[in-house]
Length: 111
Length: 116
Image (tube, rainbow over all chains, first blue to last red; front, side, top):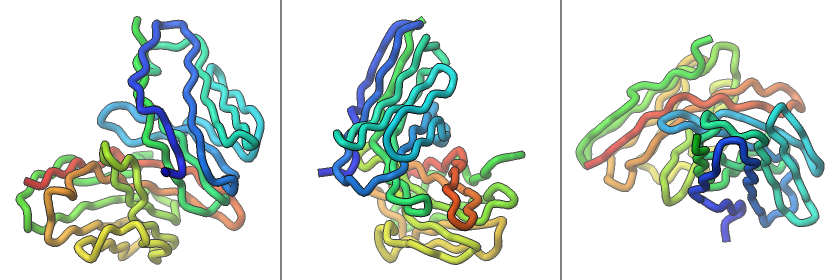
């Protein structure tokens, strides 16, 4: 079993829809949770970074962490074609430990 | 800020040849990471350096892979001899890691390696 599981998609939604992306993990020792966005033929870029459980909002993006269920989510409101990319969840045990990435979900927003 | 710079962007080589990938981290960053991304295995950490010193190379697949960081502004990842299963996109990332701080890693554009 992988430490971090993520549905690869692809996920296709119409412009303006709310998108929900999710990951599950197996090790309760993870403390830091991240979402990266990767456009085609580019490197990943950090989108959201949260510590422990709870919600964090940044513009149209909301990250949720439920440590009791070992489940994290990324919500995108009012989705735009420019949001079309692969989204990777990631997590780490401590602030300095190596990052473990999910396999990524490919998202397409239809105009 | 130019970001993390990697070269070459694309490399096609034949099995058995030596391959050298290069990375210039963001100026002022003290940590450097080499990752490999494939469809099968996703994004995996190969090795990382802190203040030019290798800290964790447990992700390096085998002895054919080696990495160096001779100074704060340059690192190489070498594969010798290369094999078709080494075909992947190799990313370099850098960050500034202070005492007790959590760090944000900035990724380069990657080198797409194809070994025939």
